[in-house]
Length: 405
Image (tube, rainbow, N blue to C red; front, side, top):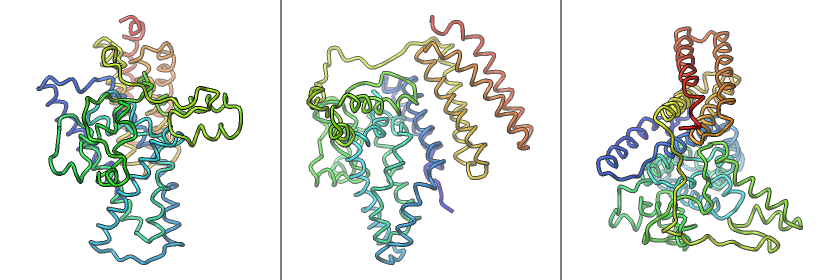
């Protein structure tokens, strides 16, 4: 039975986020904004949900090569773990580097870079579709003969390591800066400053960037985000917007070669007809403004409620996914995504928020009815129904005002 170390670490993630938030509040450091943090965490929820549905499919490739084509029988020793740890980190570097340098891969990875803040919630801002291709980079390890369970364990810990480096509260790690990927190194990676773009792709060990010429020390102030800001709290749009840009560029290209190049060239590449390569602009520090939307306390409370509903349902599925029917999982996941979608629309004061929120409430009632016929515990269903009705009353209280406040 495979252990989901990421799911087990979720409570620790939120504890550490709380500690960092309290520290920055005490020090009056404006590292957190509620709307941005909700958007980041919503991406993390969506990423985990999509991963639950795809995990078995994506693992098939590694398992098949290991079982049929592996070159060696590698014993389970401490040296195997050490060598595989280095191997996982090495191939992560190349996966991460290619995800920043090939447009079709960047279309997924861009989600992780969209936040204009840098705090521990950004670590959880993950693409919903990146896992569909990332596994391919690790297949040489299966061919060599490294056990799939050990591989999954070490790749999970490689991911877990990277959580803590998404912080501005730790400035330098001294001599460890020469070996490990640290907050300072990873801040550079998230920078939209031209000198910081496509630098420091490391997972755990920064030695790969030093060896392959992609290392950049943190020097000038880092401006976080992407060169063309997302300017949205919509979690679905965040995962699709760059694909839209690529498809539109491909349509405007004259020949099939350029249409293909749009997807395989680095970000910023355009056919000569469309102006050629567009380099990242220098940061205009005087006029620089982060995307932000103002809402009243009443509206923000409702946005937090929507997010907490999505978080609760997403956490439930992380731990009970394998015990539920596929139809049940699809319905709950759909309601979770819809809750995050309307939360983002609320924060942006979108005109369609009210209509979609009506749909969400009707959908929620349908799901409760569906679960009732699956003999879910009646006390759970009653509790969910009470919560559903209570939030509906609050929704009716704010729906006519939220765009004007």
